[in-house]
Image 1 (cartoon, helix red, strand yellow):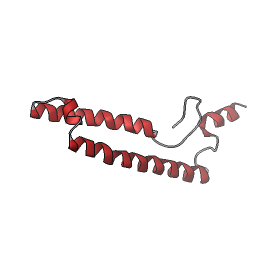
Image 2 (tube, helix red, strand yellow):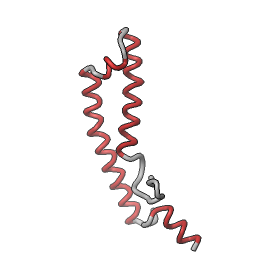
Image 3 (cartoon, helix red, strand yellow):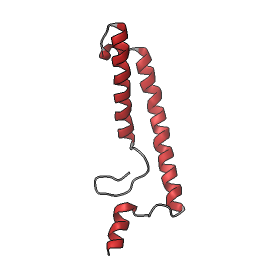
Image 4 (cartoon, rainbow, N blue to C red):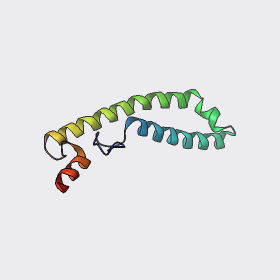
Length: 95
């Protein structure tokens, strides 16, 4: 994953991207539950079940982010990924 400057910062989605994706998934599930129960998605999202899912998922997101960083470090150490990231190595190659 590269940031706005093209600097390599790790593998996979960033923590904020994972959280946004989780929010989208929870909203979809809440909309389905709301349709089944005849209520609103907002009310479903405020329910204890969805609050619990959101809370547990926030820990999982932290674990995923930490694991992505660990994998990136391993790949850097093995020389699979260039140390300066893709943008820097392209500049070096272009010379």
